[in-house]
Image (cartoon, rainbow, N blue to C red; front, side, top):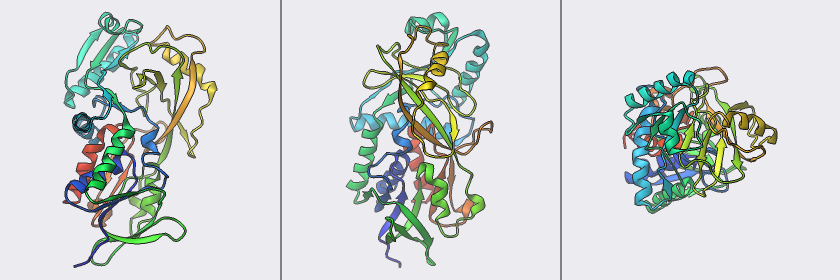
Length: 370
């Protein structure tokens, strides 16, 4: 019987990679997580809204719908048990005029189909009673939505992997992997020639690098690597007092949920993200975008003062669709897809990936029959 250095190697120490590592570790496996950056969670996981999504929007029967609801329920329990800061503030999806009412009604029906709990229809008057500065013709209340300290969450996942005898190794880029004749993999990581190790199972969850990593696995069919796109979104922070307690979302835009409002755990108001397709990892925020943001925000908050938005940060989402194309589902590719036993490759894990991470981790472990 072959002796492996580790039972499983996971590529990527963002929220999803760490959740995969935790799920495998919980099953008694020795796990090594490889991360190219100097710290965990520095990629997609560090540049998002830290929103806990209810599961409202996603198509019936999709992995996004299933994993978001399952993951959100598991996430709140996890945050409680690990004493990680969060705020279940609820979300208002707002129709700012009569024309948008059918849009939010469709969201309500989809959310109900998805099993989201506690949804309420609100009149404009009821919504304004909750949030007096809100411009709302009508709204949907999702009480299960919230915010959390995502980095503390990732530190807890890392701790569980290490408690199980595994390791999370940073500044160690994945270089390549080759399947071994009797099963398992030889993995090279670390740059400049790298170090080589063996494992029985391999999971790739490197976010924006998913296509590149898959292409470095010997025998992975190029035709089974989906095209990737970088969807950049920028955020602006409000100078002044936060106007709303709850998350405020207008109806979604094509390909994303649109520019929304949150009062972060520090009590400050943040707006974003927008969506712009880019070719490189550029995290700059153009201050000139503030004017467009302000126009959009005033649809639901007419009281936004002039000049109150300051550039904050940008994130890039690993999208599987380009501009104007339909938004696809999460992709969890196992041996039935690419033909390599013991390998699960993840693609397109964007929103609601953070909320879904615990559920994705469990699904990956089940796909590997462990």
